Length: 350
Image 1 (cartoon, rainbow, N blue to C red):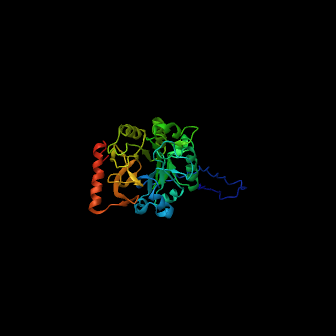
Image 2 (image 1 turned 90 degrees about the vertical axis):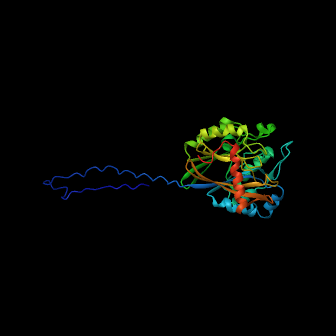
Image 3 (image 1 turned 120 degrees about the vertical axis):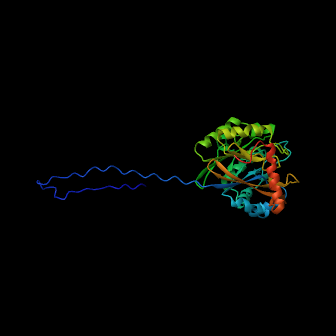
């Protein structure tokens, strides 16, 4: 509510004295309402981890104590203003797995309890396992999301919901995050892709639809982030589809493009003034080896459209969860992560 000051000017003489000229109070123009000061934007941090599910030994961890299921890496995630991972599983305990699919993942709704307790603020379910239990699994997932009130992007009852960004104001910055998948098994593309009348996932194969979502987000947000499921399994350099899509997303208005799928780390760096990470690898995963067990947390410091700093916290998967690598071994892992940029076409600075 704005306060308006009014100045009153009165006459010194009585109004019924004919010998005294009446003095009319000047009309007072309404005072201008003072504009509310714009919120001051300050840099914020956002931490990204890779692919997460709760299969095998991880299900035991989840069932034993959801609040510690992600292990010690929760301390790293919780330090950031925002944290995000790829939730690579359907959230259901029923239904029939996708016919003919070799690997199908599902988890109970306590997965959201585990993620929240670890400091994760938002996840993408747009990936090649998000609908492993088909439409009934999708219905269960959407019901669990609604009940948990946990922010999820890349999935919905229709295309409008699936491509809709999650928005959050952080240190005065209006942040929008969109999720989509570039990886879908050919036989499930039609059944899994969200449309006007069908629930499903946001597909990056519907390229123009994704680019339009980015353009729309650009109009009224300070920072636009696109989280993608993309890449070729076990291939250390970005594939042609990634190299083609990344600059289009940047041109449409994305400030940050991150993602995974390859089960290994890929290069990260700047494309013009935008920041791209082609592969965050496995994160909370039941299967790991010398390369597939290499993981970590990418933390970006951002102010508006400017990515000011990238920090890599290296980790190794042990018992299904990331354990931070420190000391000289940690420095070697950081050097390895930086070396992956060589075949990415990205630069160390904007």
